[in-house]
Image 1 (cartoon, rainbow, N blue to C red):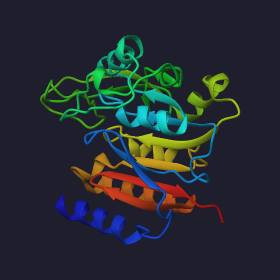
Image 2 (spheres, rainbow, N blue to C red; image 1 turned 135 degrees about the vertical axis):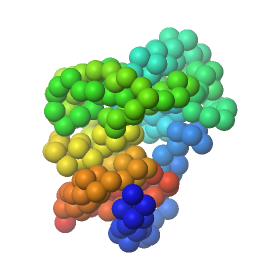
Image 3 (cartoon, one colour; image 1 turned 90 degrees about the vertical axis):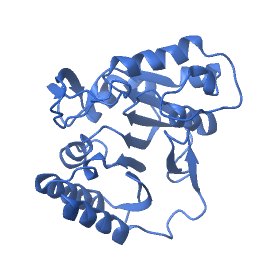
Length: 257
C-alpha cells in the first residue's frame, strides 16, 4: 500500500545522518550495479572480506571493491545464470585496467576490469541467503530477460526450490579463505529476503558496514511494514547509522559506543 511505502521512506529519511563518514564515501560499479560504501580505515580495514548476496549478471561493484581495496569477496546467488556469469568472468576475461560499462543490468565480461589478483579474490557460493538452512521457494522474474528471483509470490510464473545458507554457515565453511580477515561489508540485494536476514540472523551484526536494497519497499503491505520496522529497530539497536539512500539501496555504518 502507498501509505506504508511513503511512511517507510519517511522513516529512512528521518534517521539518515548527513555528517557521519565525512568525505570518505565512494560509489563503485556500473550505473545499474553501483553501491556506495565508506572507504575509511575504520569501516574498510586492510585484509578484509565482503559477503555479497544477490549477484545477477552484474558484478561490477564487487570487482571494483577488490580492485581498489584488495577485499576478498564471497558472492552468493542460487540462480544458474549468475553462476554462469561469474564463471565466464573467471575463465574468459583477459587482463584489463579500465572498465567500459554498457547500459542495462547484463554485463559482458569484456566490460570489467580484470587481472589474476581480482580473480583469486572471488569465491562463488551457489545458495540463496536466508536466516536458516532449508529448501525454499523462489519465484522467477515474469520477464525472462531479467535474472532476479524473489521470495515474493508472482502469479504468472512457477516457483523453483533453492537450498539456502546462513551468514554463520558461510563464515564457518569458508574459514580457511577468510582467516585473519575482517568482516567489513555485508551486501544484500536479494529481492525481498533482506528483512528476514536482518531480523532473525545474528552473524552479520558485527560487520563494519551493511548495504541493503530494501526491495520490500516496492509493494509494501502491513506485514512487510511491520517486518521493515523490526529490521530498522534491529539495525539501530546494533549501533548502525544510516548514511546513504539511493533509490532502494542504503548504506549503514556501525559505530560502537
